Image (cartoon, rainbow, N blue to C red; front, side, top):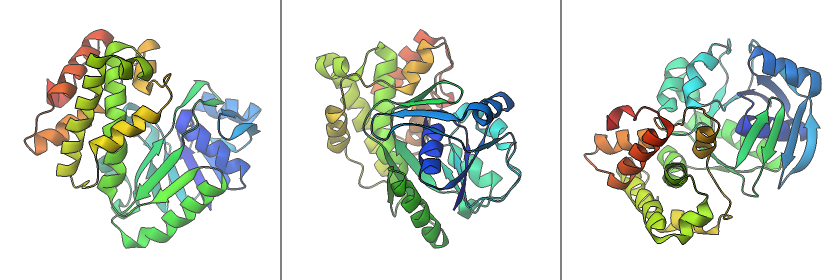
Length: 304
């Protein structure tokens, strides 16, 4: 299959490099300077689980050739401008953004049935253009669609990812794909960013661990109301208990680098979903307020 990757940051760059190394035809879609950097020097990937290599996929500023799959891996705040670089209608659109709201944006932009629910569990960063660092051993991609016609394409994509060393699962429930990650990601992002501490210290400090568990429990209640019947607080907590103690979050790194945190995309999406069902999330609301004050960032719309 032919795969385009919009946004060669930590997530997009890692998948683009892995797929290209395994023999999949890959084209990266990026800003002019980033595309030029990758075209000139390749994509340098250092992965704890996959090794180290340099990939040389095609890199362009604008996608004008048909593709089987468009992997969308931008930040939520940069999604709509980035979509201006896509001039074709991909057979499948596979978003790997944080939060929930991007699904509606993409289903308005492309054929609604072509847009999959997708998530990735990974710790990866792009310290500079064309350089990708994957810093932990976990790497799992999940996808689902309510459209039966998308099943064959999803299974082909999952096989291509597996051939590239990336664990991939095709599930039956879109809500399960989105919320099984979000309940864990939201709690990790909120606690690490509110307190500027890594997971090990959060787990070992009783008051901070209580916030971590409270954020998970609140998000699980919202996820179940949204249709993710199998999200379970104990499972999410156990997953974070197994993670390495130096695990942080992209939101925490964004604040440290002076970049806007994804408060609206991550906890904002949980709080908006909670409001739809008349639920309150006091732990998440308190952590969001702490982060907004610490980062000098606006509160998510629902929390103002």
